[in-house]
Length: 421
Image (tube, rainbow, N blue to C red):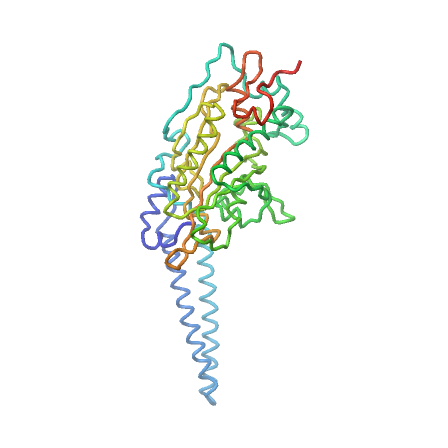
């Protein structure tokens, strides 16, 4: 949620941001609703004050004068009730729109409305050149007997997969590899809950807009997270943090769940886009003055991890119209997938400025004695499934075997995944 002062004092800033996102919102009507809410509540309070003042006088009145005062007080009570109800109705109408307004787009975010408009910043590493026809990860997974989506479909339906054997060990190696790097970089490891209350999803900006993507457990009033960002952000909800503890950095490992509603037909082969996947997520609470630098720091950590895994990639500045509701700016790291002959998203990191903190009421005690909203940032350290795909495809050999990146060998105890004999 953005600062209401923007709507009241600088609506043109909001209009510009919405236009960059390709969204059409009647900002003038929104501002008018906000004004009417405040005016109606003010009138209600004036009536209430007159009613209270009259109530004090009634005890001193007698006869007809007292009866008239009682009647007037009753009329004022009804007027207060009517105005309060009108204000509540206006407030509901306003909030239904206001909670859908996304964060203000950072001036340095790329222009455009779709993934095709993302601005490439740089490329690192050369895509592999094979003297054979490279296999995709689904074919490699079957050949190596490390990925089974057929039996997963039998057990759970489409868009699920089993990791088997050395692929399962590869997952644990990737998680520990990432955690070791992040602990060294000052992050506190966390294994957060994956079932959360509604306020956590609203607070992080996933509700109301992305509600259709979230699995719900109605009997318990809980929801399965699509990223541990949700649990990590809500960890300090309703808290006032000491300024000196900032930045606070967490590295959360969790299983994530997404319904992928509306994406059927895209990336349905293998485990590229599935309903359940594991991820190591970075999350930071920072001083507002430091959030831009923290964003660049998260990106540099992601790059280091991808480079260490010997994967060719590019970094893109995500187009304004392709940003999530909470993000002011976002970088994606896209890794080369030989089977598709293109770069696809592997990790991302976003600066959500004070958008989530305002919803979750997370502040810090500033030096002047007052409180200010923190800034929050998130970034994917390791998206396990897609990273396994990238390793299989980029490090494959003609006989179907796959070389393990050197950095992971100490965690695994082997340097090659070979087809079973």
